[in-house]
Image (cartoon, rainbow, N blue to C red):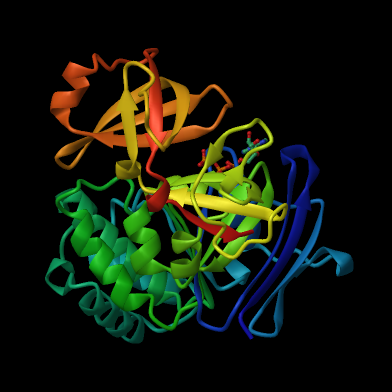
Length: 351
Ligand SMILES: Nc1ncnc2c1ncn2[C@@H]1O[C@H](COP(=O)(O)OP(=O)(O)OP(=O)(O)O)[C@@H](O)[C@H]1O
């Protein structure tokens, strides 16, 4: 049971196979152009791959080996996009009842189903309104109800909170959290909070390939790609374990112990931005590893400023500094700096 998926689309360099357990919620992460929307499109039936097959709860969703490529509306796959895309000329109740009506459910039954789903998304009192009379958050909750009213076997969510104001996103997130329980879901997101709160598993795509997958908590605690490390707010250096940490092929070295990784074996060193100190000149007499780097970007993060840098060995390392030290160190994009990583704050683990 659950979802088994494999598809290849050469024109987009997309070749992904993945599995999802029964009623599991998968978060799909990855940089722009990684293939996340392509994955959703193939599942929804709007993007046809060159080859592939998928099974949902033991039944084929599509199977190009046998020439089976059902139309989107025959798949019982629900899609929720960034934009609610409600029908402007129908009231909220009719919008939510539209799916059941289209599949032949009598009007009264369809409307009763619609009311139930509106209640589940805390939008029952909006039933008589037109979409033009709804706020962004209300419209998105109605769109959730509309997607669920079709009783989908698989729910696809394409950055469902990305277009919402930060003040309304929490309510929509809470609603999604309650209605997604027990539903097989594929959620595309760039957001750490959505990943943590709305997924059981994570799949990371890069350049059309699956590069990392596992239970959400494990992947974020022990990221194996710099993409997930940065999402989790951590730095990640991949390389070979030596007696004293991890060394990358380009010669960058961080860490203290080996974390149980055999010397010479592949290892990952993970450390938080606040374990990185930034200096204008190379610090002397420090036991810590010193990395020459260039500042790429400064961005506020709570009471601190995140300084994204690229080391001379090509690794991205993020430091966290106080606003005062931005002035004292005269930090700006393009500035050459020296980074020191506190060795005791580095965790090394096998990859
Ligand atoms: N309609 C299209 N026709 C041809 N190529 C496309 C089309 N849409 C996307 N691609 C290409 O397919 C690859 C995967 O794109 P896709 O949109 O699936 O990535 P994504 O991970 O969803 O990115 P983003 O986070 O920017 O939405 C990219 O190389 C992209 O240029």
